[in-house]
Amino acid sequence: MSAVLVTRDGPVLTVTIDRPERRNAMTYGAWDELGAAFQEAAARDARVVVVTGTGGAFCSGGDLDGGDRAAHPHAQLAAVARTCQALVALPQPTIAQVNGLAAGAGFGLALACDFVVASTRARFGTMFLARGLSPDFATSWLLPRLVGLRMATRLCLLPEIFDAARARELGLLEDVVAPEELPGAVATLAALLAAGPPIATRLTKQLLRDSFARGVAESLAAETTAQAVNRLSADAQEGIAAFLERRPARFEGR
Image (cartoon, rainbow, N blue to C red; front, side, top):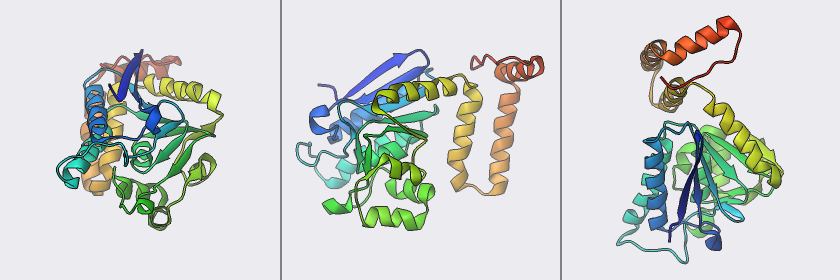
């Protein structure tokens, strides 16, 4: 039985973890399935990718009870790393739709998305140390960049579950809404992103992601190359024409 569902609604592709009986905890096979879904999404023409979970959880991390086992822990965790890399490498903007628990690697899964929209039911936490484990799913890379080293250290070394209001206070969320409003809030954000110029959107996302590994000179060179690509696109001509004609632009990804 599949642990991951992929659906399409116009320009928006939704990847849903479907293990509600385990609060969407992930076996290593499920991580590989999720990673494959992200790799497939990268090759498709969808403009936005939404990541969510069924039932009352987003993703409670690795399945520590009913999970499968590989020959060695390193082989097991390689599946987690592959999935994280596939998500981070997605050229489309990504939105985590969180309507329940996001803990452990599930917390990292949410953080790895470009946007996080949560309901008031959402709960978050690293929780690795509470299980005698250390962070994975790039949590040790993402958290310091999002909240600073000192707060990241606190969240990892003093693990606790905290609510959506606290997550927003820490700068981890874009918005917190009532549970019944969550799908609509995500759909509105997805529509705004999907209406943007696909080529420039993907290049902008790549520039921002790569900036941590570049100096100013390298960033300027990368910006020059990206902007040259944009200037030659039909979308840029449409965007400029729309500005001059004072009308909404209609971007087609050309």
